[in-house]
Every structure is written in C-alpha cells, then in structure tokens.
Length: 284
Ligand code: C2E
Ligand code: MG
Ligand code: MG
Ligand code: MG
Image (cartoon, rainbow, N blue to C red; front, side, top):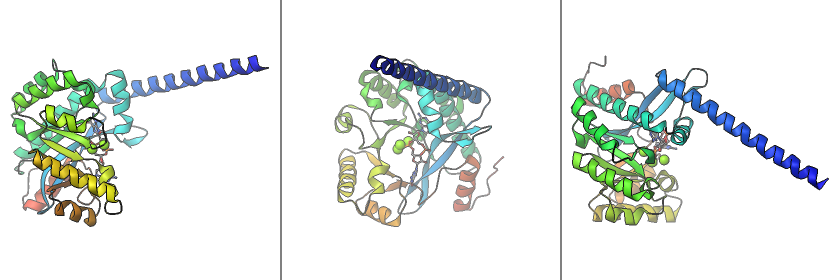
C-alpha cells in the first residue's frame, strides 16, 4: 500500500509539474503573439512636486491590452518575459516607446518632463543596453538627463554587470534611480559604490504612515540619508494627505501615488498637463 502511495504521489507531482510547464509555455507563446501584434501599451503615472502640485515627470508602466482577458498589468508580462528572455526585446520596446512619447509631448508644446522607465536585471548588459540607449537618444533627440532608469535592489545583486552598465549609462548622462528602496538587502552598500542619483522609497513604508512608528522612522531615515548623500528622493504610493504632510515635514519634495494620479494613457497625461498649464496642445 505504501509503495502505491509513493507512486501515486510521484505521478501527482509529475502531473502537476507538467501542468505548470504547459501553462507557462502557453502564456509565453501568448505573450510573444501579443508583443508581435502590438498589444503591449504604456501607461504613465505623474511624479509630483508636493509643495506646488507641479508634474515633474512620469513613470512608464507596462500594460497588456489582451484580446480576451482585457487590460492586464505588469504581473502578466514581466515574470514570464524575464523567464524566457523576452524581457530584453520587450524592455527595449518600452524604452523606445517611452522616449518617443516624451518627444511627442515636447513637440506638442508641453513643458519638459522626466521620463522614468523600469529596467529588469537581464537588461543590465554592459555590451548591449548602453549602446542601445545611445542610439535611441541620438535618433530621438531626447536629452539624456530627461531619461531615468529605475532598477531594484535585487538587480544590484549581479554586481559586476550592473556596475559596468551603470557607469556607461552615467557617461551618457542618464539618471539612475533605485526602485522600491528599503526592501532589499544591499541598499546601504550599493549607495557607496554605485552611481545612483535618486531613491524611490518603497510603497510598503508609505502605506503604514502614520499608524506605524517603524515605517515612519525608516522613511525619515531614508530621506535624511538621501539628502546627506546628495541624492534626490521620491515617495511611492502616496495615497493620503496625512502621508503627504509627514513626507513634506521630513523634507521629501516629490511624491507619486493615487493621491495625485493613477497611471493613465498618454492622451490623459497630455490632457492633464495641458489643463494645468492652460495650453491647448496638438494631441494628434
Ligand atoms: P514599480 O516600478 O514600483 O511601480 C509602481 C507601482 O505602484 C505601479 O504598479 C503603480 O501602479 C503602483 N502605484 C502607484 N501609486 C500607487 C498608490 O498610491 N497606491 C497603490 N496601492 N499602488 C500605487 P504596476 O503598474 O502594477 O507595476 C508593478 C511593477 O511592475 C512596477 O513596480 C515595476 O516593478 C514593474 N514594471 C512595470 N512596468 C515595467 C516595465 O516596463 N519593465 C519592467 N522591467 N518592469 C515593469
Ligand atoms: Mg518603478
Ligand atoms: Mg517601486
Ligand atoms: Mg514595486
């Protein structure tokens, strides 16, 4: 009986593994199809100067306009693409699309914005990403300092490639931000050795302000450290006025979150900016 149990369990595991592998392959194939068909789109979330409400920049966030499942978030795209390597061409598409959009807004007469783009660890290839970005900036004419690359602390774990890539990106004049700051393990050391311009305080700390004293203390410490190190800092996931008040009182100038705006289509960003600046841009 015991033997049978073991065999059954083994059969169950293999069946489960086969099912997962099949599911993954189906999703991967569907993503390749969607990518080829132009179903990926970018939404943009404004980054706000809290004192004035001015929009200083936007972060590009990927979406998948799926033919049957509707509008899907990055969770439906990024993990699959990272596994298969498709993240490299998709990531390059994101960078190209974001730069083209930034240029289109400039041509429409909107004030210049920072364009922040998330970049995965697998894209941090010193033999590929810098050359790709140099060509892209040359072709589009977007000033390098308008483009900000967001990497997470886990990306910094592959130290050699990451450092080599970052040094080249800084030589091109791009800005570099650490995303979800405070959630990884190597955050302090990486600030000493890497050319980082900006810290994005992770949403999980902001979420628990003002109820949680520890989150307040950590947020306060990150802001102070960023300033001491001559880095800029922005808070992610600002949803309430109480959070904004706390951040401002601790010297944080910039915020991003639902309190100001959700991620939105490019046309909606242009409309929002046009309204604020009293412009009537050509949105075509
Ligand atoms: P992230 O870079 O930390 O982006 C911020 C996420 O927080 C976004 O989720 C945004 O919609 C959400 N968010 C912003 N403000 C608030 C708020 O006030 N409250 C709450 N609850 N959430 C807020 P989204 O768009 O689902 O993106 C999730 C993650 O997917 C991003 O986290 C980023 O790591 C990744 N991602 C998105 N686009 C790309 C991409 O083009 N390439 C790569 N490699 N990763 C991407
Ligand atoms: Mg980000
Ligand atoms: Mg983040
Ligand atoms: Mg995140």
